[in-house]
Length: 364
Image 1 (spheres, one colour):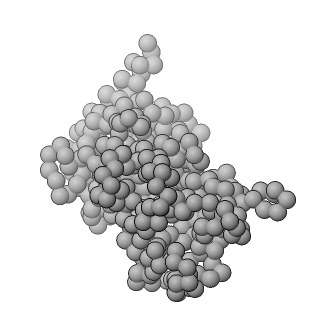
Image 2 (cartoon, helix red, strand yellow):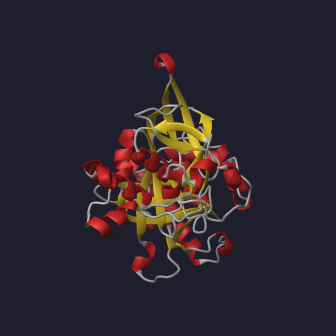
Image 3 (cartoon, one colour):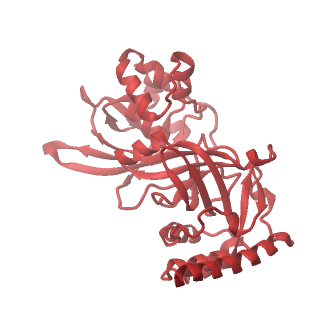
């Protein structure tokens, strides 16, 4: 009975301090750092299951972000670095005494709905590929075309359909830019939606080579959901990726129309494979279960976030770190949860679509 009592003493005392602090003038981050969201100071006791998560499991991702701290985080990051060998209770006590929770809300809404948003999931595909095209592996993944390599180029380039059309100017511009070839246009689309992945390259004499592909740029076309196209065109109700894939495999004559409904194409750069996760927009490896993609105009990169989401796919109440972004991740209460690598992670990520609440944790 001593441990629950200890937790209560720590929680109650820190919660009282945090509650009174929230009522005083706070040193809030400048609104220019989060123009797409409203931050409302709250007490720690409003965060669900604050004692049920192990903050040590997020410490690696957090300290990685602290290697590139914003000015307002430098002192707190220095203190956190000194706790890298501390147990979870000590880390939690430091968090509650040193950080102020802010509920993330939509600036365009009021009431309870302002703090409720959407959680989706993403993952790192691991796909079998070939360096050279053949009758089976014939769908290319490309490097950035030369005319888009120049910094600051934002004009729309050729659409996905144009890029896939044999003999088109787009294909001519991409001559010699293929990194590898996959077995299905669905695999190409999935890899481009996720923004990164690993390839298991089968070479001569059955030798395997593992490489990682990272986001290099896009054709600057708008992202359009193939699920929405299926709903509007064929009335499909289950818009999870497994359901979309099953429909496409049952309707091979509609495969091109399906993938062409999303004109956006992502180009890649090749990196050596490693045991670390793929690089997020912060330029750091992502950590499965502890990294999220956010709207960078709602939550700055490197910010610790308390995330709460309940649904059929997952029940989440945990500490995560904002380390990535995505084309479809727009708005205040919006996050993409990095599940991990491989097919099992893909099954979870493909079905994850549920309600979300978030609280950022910011130095006092």
